[in-house]
Image (cartoon, rainbow, N blue to C red; front, top):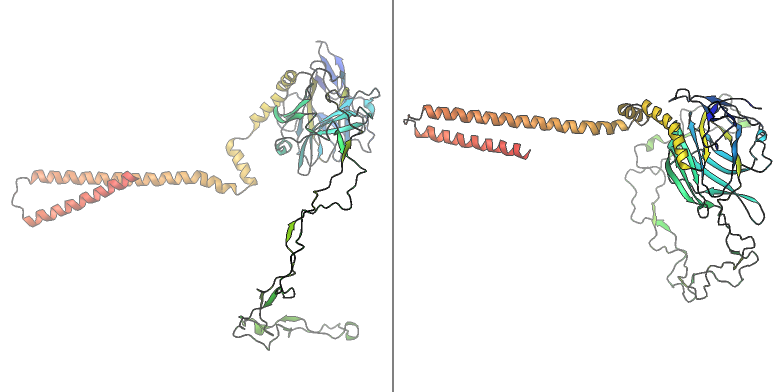
Amino acid sequence: MVEETSTFRLINKRIFLGQRRRSADGSVEIRLERASSLLPAAGQWAVEQLKENKVPGDLGLVLKSRAKHHAIAAPLVKPFVFQDEPLVVQYEVNFQDGIDCGGAYIKLLSDTGSLNLEQFHDRTPYTIMFGPDKCGEDYKLHFIFRHKNPLNKDMEEKHAKRADVDLKKFYTDKKTHLYTLVLNPDNSYEMFIDQSSVSRGSLLQDVVPPVNPPKEIDDPHDSKPDDWDERAKIPDPEAEKPDDWDEDAPAKVEDPDAVKPEGWLDDELEFVADPTAEKPEDWDEEMDGEWEAPQIPNPACETAPGCGEWKRPMINNPQYKGKWKAPLVDNSNYQGVWKPRKIQNPDYFEDLQPFRMTPFKALGLELWSMTSDIYFDNFIVTSRKEVADRWASDSWGLKKLVASANEPGILAQLTMAAEERPWLWVIYILTVGLPIGLAVLFFIHHNQCSVKATEGEMEDNEEGGEDNLEGGDEGEEEEEEEEENKSSERTLEEEDGVRAACSSA
C-alpha cells in the first residue's frame, strides 16, 4: 500500500524516507511509503504539525497509536557502502506527550538482495539501529550495529556504551531534539543530541560484546584437583581452649541490682475480663463453646508501675564468651584460587575494520510504544557532517528558535517550578527578603545617626551664641560655671559615643 503523506526535500541525493521523484526545479522530492506489518496489530501514522511551537507550513511524521507495533520505511537513492567515507545519520524526535515506555529509534536496513519494504517487520535484517529508547526510569540512546563473524558468518549485535550525560530531560521537556550519529572509517564513533556530544568511543574497544573474541579461553575440560587448597587462613592446629572458658554460660542474666518499683501490684492481673461485655444472643455453647468475655487492660494498673509477678530485667552476662574457636593463622599449604588453564580459542578471529559493515539501502521505523503522538522529522543520511549541520540549521534550528521565543519569562518559570516544588517558596523569600530587610535596617540606623549629629551641631551653635552675648558678664557665680562645664562634658561624651557608633556601622 502506497499513500502520499508528506513531501520533503533531499540533500546530496542520499536521504531518507520514501520514493523519490524529480520536481520542475530539478530538486529531488520524496513521499513516504507505508509498510505492511507481519506483527499482530499495525499502528497508525499521520503527517501533522507539532502540537506546540509550530513552524508555519512544517509537517512531520507522527506515530499515532498506543500499545501497537508500527512499521514504515523507504529506500535510499542508492545503497550506502562502508568504505572510505564517514557515515552521518541524523533526525528529529519530539515526545509531545512525554514517554512512558517505548522507542523512537531508526533502523538502517541491510542491502540483502531480498529486501522488500512492503514486508518490513521486526525481523527484517538491519545494519545499524540508532536513537532514543525509554522504559520506566531507564533512559537510553541506542547505537547498535550487526557484525558478521568472518568464520561462521553469523550476525551478532554489538551495543555501544551508554551515554555520558543524563538523558532524562530529552524525554520529558516536550521539545524537538536532534539526534546525530557519526561513524568514521577509523572505527571511531560519536553521538550527538542537539549538536552536543553525549558519547564517543571506538568500535574495537567500547562495544559489548567485543567485536574480536579473546585469543585464549579457559579450558572447558580442565578441573580443580581434589587436593587443591584455596584456604588462605586456617584455624591454628596448636591452639587449645582455656580451662576457664565456659561455653555454657548464658548470654543474658538477671540484673542483680534491679529493685522492684514501689507500688507494683503483684496480685493484680495485667489483663482482665471486660465487665461490660455481654454474651451475644445467638451464642450457642454446644456449637461455639463456653462464652468468655474479651480481655481488656486492667484499670487498676493504669496508675501503677506494673502488675502481676515482678521479674528482674535481663542484662548482658559479663562472663559470657560463647563457643570457643581457634584463632586463624596463615595456611602453609595455601595454593591460591584455582583457575582453569588457558588454551587457544578455536573461534578466535581479528577484524580490525568493523566499520566495514553490511551496506544498507533503506531507512525504517519499527517501533512499539505505550505513548502516542511521537513526532519525527528531517531524516538525513550522508557522508559529510557539515551537510547534516546545514540541514539542521535550516530545519531543527527554526524549531529551536520558535520554542525559545515561546518560552515563559524568568518569573513565570520560577512560579511554575514552585508549583511543582512548594518548598522553593521558602528559598525565594529568603533570597529576596533577607537583602531587603538588611537594607531597611541600615537605612533606619543611618538616619538615626544623621539626626543625632544634626542635633549635636545645633546645640553647639546655640551655646556658642550665648557665650558671645554673655562674654562681658563676669558676674556669674562659680557654682553655675562648674555646673555648665560638667553638663558640656557629658554632652561631648554622648556625641563622641554617637559618632563612634555611626562610624562602626
